Length: 294
Image (cartoon, rainbow, N blue to C red):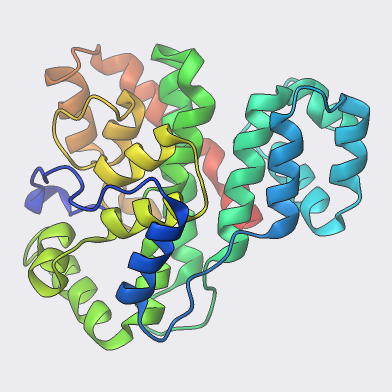
């Protein structure tokens, strides 16, 4: 989750690098205390394994997806949303696989697995629906930026941008009183969220998110993006992810992209008009995706 623009500051790369799933789960258990470390859904895990297996034919893959109604329904709703901007509506699982390709299908199944696994509960001080709306907006803007400037990175950036702050709902559940106070201080502009977390706990939500990604055996590019998206100059984080990480969590009608624009122009040397056009495109696309995720 990002510091409001007026309080933004660069963070150091993750202090908790981890690649071993068992080690990551052990570290998470210490951080989360009485809250159980969430598991990635087995159905989504099986599908990811099949998608990554080149010996698995499209027909067999279609049958696997269709055999899990929960996954197939959410997958169809998601890929038919404006976020994907497909040239035609997807009419079946096999049609979705043919249009998306394995890489895009993998990223979509992974993202849906995460949203299924993380806590969703009513809380007067933390609205999970608004949280996922902000994540969806970040993801569709990242995709639109990639379509303009880095088409080959579109799928990775979409998923990474969606999941950058995935540890936050878990931390709210694990440490409700303390973490909600931190969120309140961040929203009041006391300091960047990363700084408030580190001062209180000795770690921040990006580091915890990277541990969760390691526990779930996510690809390294996603683990790096989640861990270091606020670290200025980090080479392993795609440009579009770095840009959307600068956005604050303002209400929908108060989206402030000044810092994103400044970073795009001055750090990456991008022309401002196409950047602004891509942001506008992403904003137009995100509402349907947000409904699919919540």
